[in-house]
Length: 148
Image 1 (cartoon, rainbow, N blue to C red):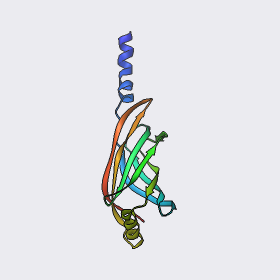
Image 2 (spheres, rainbow, N blue to C red):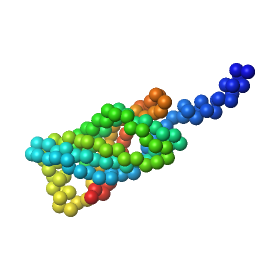
Image 3 (tube, rainbow, N blue to C red):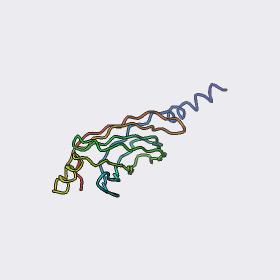
Image 4 (cartoon, rainbow, N blue to C red):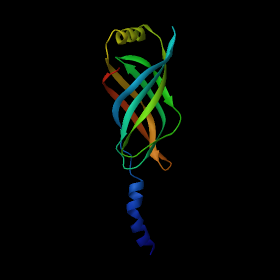
């Protein structure tokens, strides 16, 4: 009898233990300067992603380095847990404290001068999972982005 119960529950166990697929990066929704002075700038960057999984996923402990046109801007850490809906898009706001340097001033000048397309590079790691089971998830994206 126990064998039949196990065989009946096997499909449910296999689905519940399925490894989550990686999120699809859709682009940057917005970049806002929260505050700025001569030594640093506080930015809020909102990225859009798509969860291709057939189940909701928890996203936590993210750490991402951001570079624009090869200039390292800083690292952002997410220490809270975000529940990502199944088969849906979601937005991830990232707060970043950027030290002002000549490279950063040049990037701001190019943006203010009308240039709107930049090379964005994201490198980092996070944990994704569900039901208390998490896997390490590498984050990497490099591509041209139009920033308005």
